[in-house]
Length: 80
Image (cartoon, rainbow, N blue to C red; front, side, top):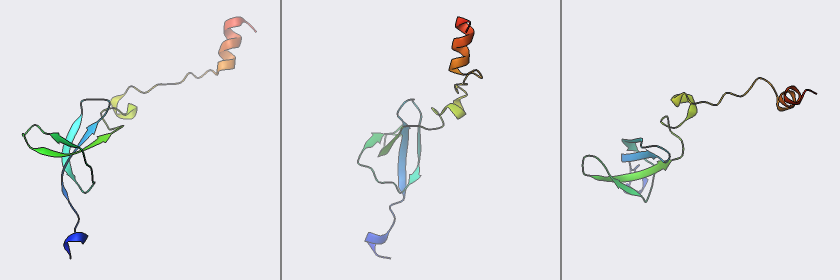
């Protein structure tokens, strides 16, 4: 296998944009950003919008919608 066909499998930090959660793992994803990790080394950084640290399903902070619809609540409130 030639060098240009080899996969660049290396340590990468994935960081949640909305929380302090970050994890160092291995990946082939390409990125130009870097971050200094807890061990003092610098690693490629991938910023994530949603991770298990911020997703409502995993955090238990899921919004539960009312069983009543908007029209029913309006009618109940104003007696129509």
